[in-house]
Image (cartoon, rainbow, N blue to C red):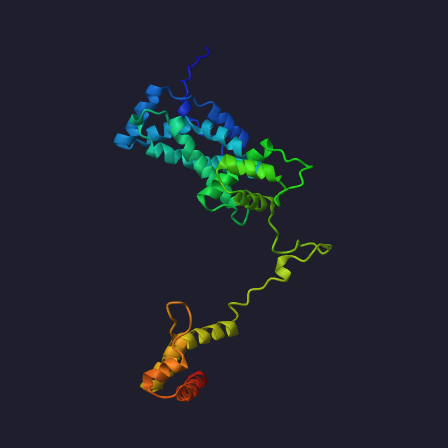
Length: 308
C-alpha cells in the first residue's frame, strides 16, 4: 500500500532568487506576492520599533519587482540590466530602512526615489570613464536630454544649427523645458556625443589605425630629476628667499622687500625708487645702487646654499 504524504505549502517569501541567471531571477521575484497595505504597515512598524530583520526582508523581497521595472527605463545607456537591478536593490534597502509607516504613503511610492537615485549614481560613474555630469543641474540635464531629443526633432534645413547637432530652435526649447541655459544644453550634448578612447593600442600586430594616446602621452612629473628641480624651486621661493634676506642689513632688506616683495592695494608693485629716496633722504640713484648690491649679495647666498 502506498502512503501519500501531503506537502506543506511553501512560504513564498522563502524564495531565494537565482544569482546566476537574470531571467531566472526575474521569474523568481515575480512569484513573490505583493503585500496588502495592512501587512506593509505591520511589517514596517516591526522593523522600526523592534529592528525585526525578518520584517525588513519581507518588505524588500515584495518590492524587488519594482526595481526590475524601474531598471528597464535605463536600458538605453548601454549598461547591463543586472548591474542596474543590483544598484536599484541597494536603493530599495535604503528606502526600507528609512521608511516611516506613519507618513501616510505606501512603500512603493517612497522607494522609487531611492531606487532611481542609486541607479542614476551608477550610470554617471560607469557610462563613461570620464564623468559627464557632476553638479545637480548637470545630472538633471543628462537624464532628461536623451528623452527630450526624441521629442524635439531638429530641422535639417535650419541654417542655424547648434554645434551639438541640434537646431538652434531645439536647443532653446530644451533649455526652456529644463530651465537651464542654452550653453549648458550644447555642452552636455557634446559630452554625451563623445566616446571613450583606448589608452593603449589593441594587441594586434596588424593594427594600422592612428597611434593610441599611450604612444604620445607621457607624465614626467615624477621623474627623479624633475622632482628634485621642483623641490629646489619651491625652496628658493620660500625658505631660500628668507635665508638670502637674512644676509642683508636692515636698510637693504627693506629696500628689496618694498621694491619686489610687496604689492599695493591696486595690484601694482611696491614702492618706487623715488618713494624710497624720500624715506631715506638720499637720491633715487643711491637707492638703485643699494638695491643692486643687495641683489648681488642675495644671489651669492642662494648660490652657496645650492652648492652645499
